[in-house]
Length: 164
Image 1: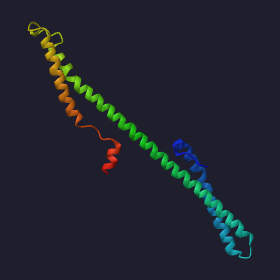
Image 2 (image 1 turned 180 degrees about the vertical axis):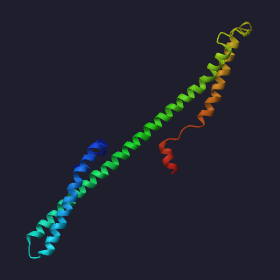
Image 3 (image 1 turned 180 degrees about the horizontal axis):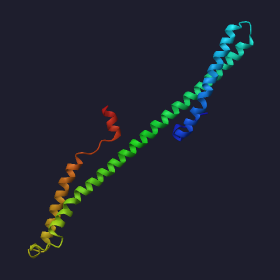
Image 4 (image 1 turned 90 degrees about the vertical axis):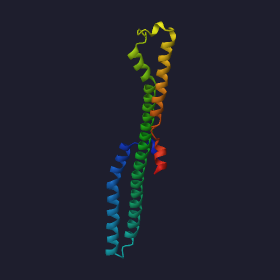
């Protein structure tokens, strides 16, 4: 039967392979035994029919076994690709989180050092401007840190494959 490898799972395929392995060995041994019997009794015409039928059974069992193994390999490759894609998405999400942290880290640091309420005497000198200067310097420092982190953008799996 035709199966879609994307819908298969490893447990089902392993069960198929485990069930087919003895069938392949038994059919191969049956064909070998009938061939040996045919060599020993060349006048027995019915052995030719049995031997040929045993060969057909052996071939069908071997094809089913190989198909199950190939499907298992393909399913494994699909799952590995899905995991690589998910890993890349997680790396991109972590990178974006690092960018946000780098952007807001100076703001939080300067606010903690100087205090948001600015009780250092700066509040007397043109009231909103020292606070706005603190915000502006923090944002500028955030952009600088963001640019350093943004230079190290993790490569995607497809870019890594092209480099090989």
